[in-house]
Amino acid sequence: MSLPINIMQGLALIMALLFASIYFGPFQSLRRAIRPQPSQFDKVRKRVILMVAIGVLIVFCAATGGNV
Image 1 (cartoon, helix red, strand yellow):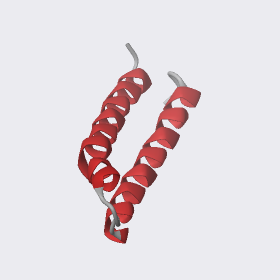
Image 2 (tube, helix red, strand yellow):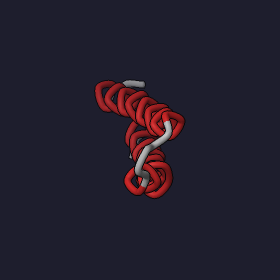
Image 3 (cartoon, one colour):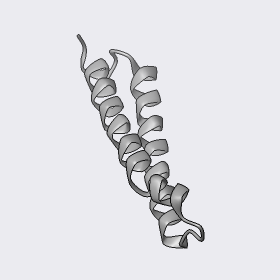
């Protein structure tokens, strides 16, 4: 396999771990909270922004293909 494919797979695993950390971390406490704190939303927002950035890197790796 070529390097971009390996990079894409590694970044996809990182994104999956980030999603799991969001879902099982602050998201569950936000669901249970009667009055959620803004800091909990900030944690989720920062992790989602990081996931979007990683997604852009994955698209870049897919666009370059084997021409890196």
